[in-house]
Every structure is written in structure tokens, then in C-alpha cells.
Image 1 (cartoon, rainbow, N blue to C red):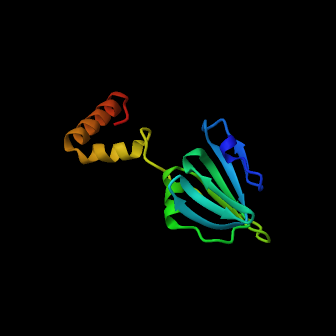
Image 2 (cartoon, rainbow, N blue to C red):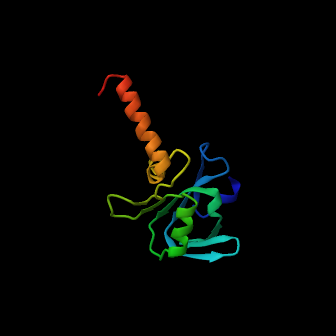
Image 3 (cartoon, helix red, strand yellow):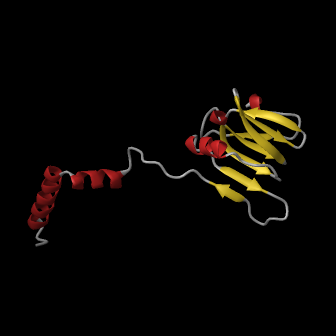
Length: 137
């Protein structure tokens, strides 16, 4: 993605998993602020405006600035993991968006079915009938 190439050491890696998105590495973060076109990321050496819709992973190396909660909220809503790595720390900080309910969320569907008395009775009768015919009772 040419939009993310910058001469001041901003690195990107395109992925085939999410077409049109790239992983973004920002060295020595100083600040992040919301602007009309996205998020203005200021780092040691310059600044860059990032559209989080085009990012699939964000790595901040040597971060020393503040992270606005609004920025973290947008990362989460766009399902973008954030890694923060600083010198002299053995492990990076890793922020991963929480799981979401989707069409394959069977547990929630089961709970809703149990709450409906008609469906709940039908499922119970079906289970008893099938177990009886299989000789389990």
C-alpha cells in the first residue's frame, strides 16, 4: 500500500488476509490526535495521517506519548490489534479487540431459545423422544 510508505522509517507490510489493509510500524511515538482525514500520528522524525480502515495491525515502537481513549476505541471498533514495544522491556504490550457475536454464535442462540417457552418445550420433548427411541432411558 503506497499510502503508508514514508521516508522517515514508517514501515508497512501488506497482507492477503484483509485485502486493502496493511500492518503499520511507527517508531518513537510522540502523540496521536484526531484530524478530519483520520489520525495524525506524530513520531520522532515527523508526522503521518493514518486511516485506521486501512490498517490491520499497529505496532508502536519506542512509544513515549499518550494514547487517547477515542483512538483505542476506534482501533477496537475496526478490530485492529495494537502492539507497543519499548527498549529494555522483554515483552511488548498487546491489545487485542474483544470477541464479537456473529452468525456462528451458537451459545447466544441457545440461551434465547431457552427463554422462549414454546421452543424450550419443543426441544425438551425432542430430546426425550430421541433418547427413548435410542434406548437411553
